[in-house]
Length: 472
Image 1 (tube, helix red, strand yellow):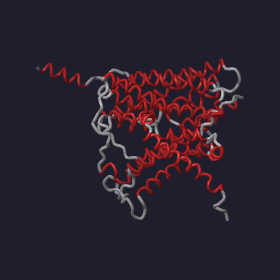
Image 2 (cartoon, helix red, strand yellow):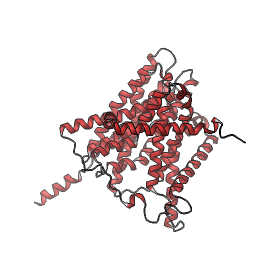
Image 3 (cartoon, one colour):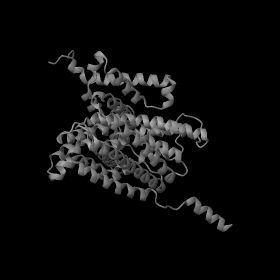
Image 4 (cartoon, helix red, strand yellow):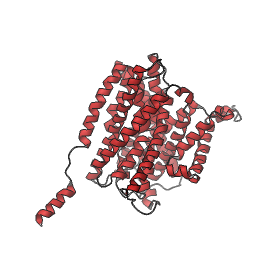
């Protein structure tokens, strides 16, 4: 019989204890220190930084388990995406559908642009670099860190490190990717706040609404026909079980793909990425389970509604907060020795191109709410969707513009647009030649996206005004 006094019985819980205490402490600091409050930095990022600062200190250094933090980051990513995918989402009109698709195209094209920017830094550096402690494809971790966050940065960082090792190179991909993700949060928050204040001083920014209080109705917490909050099983327990059920399906799907005979291409390109795509499989299977439940409801086979959007939002939010803390805490600065120059250059170039490209896209696609669209998208494309929402709420606290709706619903179109590009993540690191081919493919893909985003469209308002003038 095992003893509960044995430290090994508490090992994993201790990691969550550390994350929980750090989150509470960070939230306390952010609420009471004006500098941090004005910066809009997420409390989760501050919590991760607190752990990073304490890691070198005596006993604490032995408590924080790097591998455990990486595993927590990996699973929180998958669980968070599943919770988002299970939610019942509704698009109000055909016009909204077009905007959602266009927003997904902006997301995917920004990923491509970030990947190109990263490679244009790391490939020349590799060719000029002395020694074998750098990897030419490292720049492709920029869209994973900026665009996807710590979970994907870690997944692909580990994959890239294994490819580098197979070529006789030393590359600490996990730390490099997680550092990019941490820098992304800082860029999204600080650059966003600075630009917001510049626009305010110029008088170009109008705040929507007068209150920061969100206007919730009963429908936000519970829709008609849902199961009771607490009966034989608590409603939150049902939501957790649904998320875990889908994640179980994800595991068996990934395991099954791993056992398939996919030929030489599959062994080199697809299989190494299968386990890194847990968020993608989770999203697809989550949508499938949501569709099945909806279909059963329509046929009256299932009498009650088991999905609760509010609870799933809380699950997703918790998963992403824990993911950010664990991902930041997993960084080991000792592994970044000699990588500071490429890290700073990649992050700086990525911030500049993301800022101007997203701003240009928003001016074209959202003429009635340019800045609401920009801050929500820029925050998401350098941090997470939560960063985008935080910035958006500063100027549109009651979500009166469609910016928030676009941000939430664009996930599926973005995945559809970006999936072929994600396959390049397994192709590029195989050799320098493959990386250069990837650059060419990404340039073509970016041009195609730009043709779609910046295509000429009829201005309905201008057409209506012209018709009225003719009648007069």
